[in-house]
Image 1 (cartoon, rainbow, N blue to C red):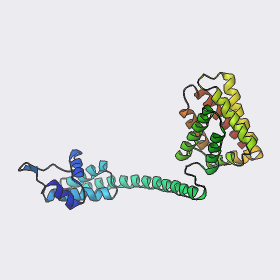
Image 2 (cartoon, rainbow, N blue to C red; image 1 turned 90 degrees about the vertical axis):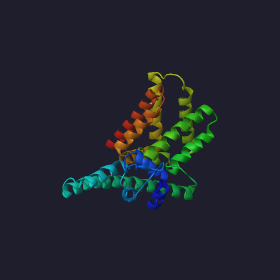
Image 3 (cartoon, rainbow, N blue to C red; image 1 turned 180 degrees about the vertical axis):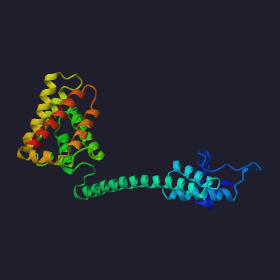
Amino acid sequence: MRAKELADLTGTTVRTVRHYHHIGLLPVPEARYGYRDYDLTHVARLTRIRWLTQAGVPLSRIGSVLHAEDGAAARSADAGRSAIATDLRATVVALDDQLEQLAAQRERVIRLVESVEREDHLSPMPPAVAHFYDDLERRAGDDRVRRVIRRERDFMELAFYRGDMPPAVEAVYLGFDDVRRADSLALFGRIADREGREPNAAEVQEIASAVVARLSRHLGPDLQRVARSVDPDVARRAADLYVRLADDRERPLARAAADAVLGALEEARRA
């Protein structure tokens, strides 16, 4: 039979058949009249490959499973079964990992659906965080300032998507009035004013201190509660990601600001 008929019989495609030839899972038949001539052994082999694939066994493991099965006759039946079982158990572990990832992905999509239905908000960030940055972008009258705000917003979105941002951070963005928004906008303006040049030590310390001061003013007596609800490991991952994404010239400032915030949270946690 031709490759097309083999593919039809086993519910796959000629392209997949050729791929299985290429990676050594399916033997290449002898040619007859200029065409590859497949027989029932190829049908049986391909059926077994497709069955294992549909069961979730990755192609990288199917070869060893089939090899162990083929060699069972040359060895003891128990040895053959043991080799196959080892591979299949490893596949179960891999599938469990995939299920955990899918469950987490499903939860994220559910939160997105809820956000869109509730507030027409499509982002892994909590609505209060997204609205804060969107509002500041609208208020900014300078493209340089808007770029700084957009860069921080993009970082926050990535951090929430990766699970590297403590959910309790949302509390920092709740209840911003016009005065506090203006305060934040002014801080972004100061950062934008010094873009493109290496910050000196005094500037780095001044801006890092201003970031902490803004955080403390906004949260007030709630700072201790928020700090104790933040997982320190997740907070450190967020800080490290922030520094990692900064430009080379901005990295000293990013590191100083991130460490200042981490220090303030740790101090409030111990208070």
